[in-house]
Length: 110
Image (cartoon, rainbow, N blue to C red; front, side, top):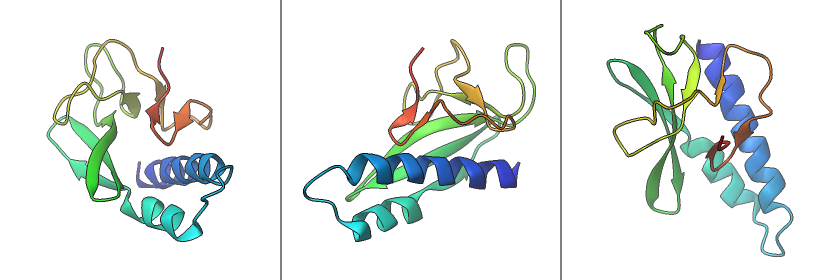
């Protein structure tokens, strides 16, 4: 799963770069700082993906660690709060090779 998380971070960073590079205030250093800020916080059931913008940390989304009744390992869930995912539907799975659902702001809405 570590390789899949690294691939996820790459796609989040690529989307952020694409978005920011269209701005007249584009700053490559800010993009690098954003990408470097991406990290994982491990919980009992989920891996929380955290990003930092300026001085504020935000939850990007959650990754299901092990299969449960509704989701399978690797499923990405949108954040409902800092500590809990929205368990309505998976937005994608990091073990698949399709990362088209990844945005720097979080997993795509349904």
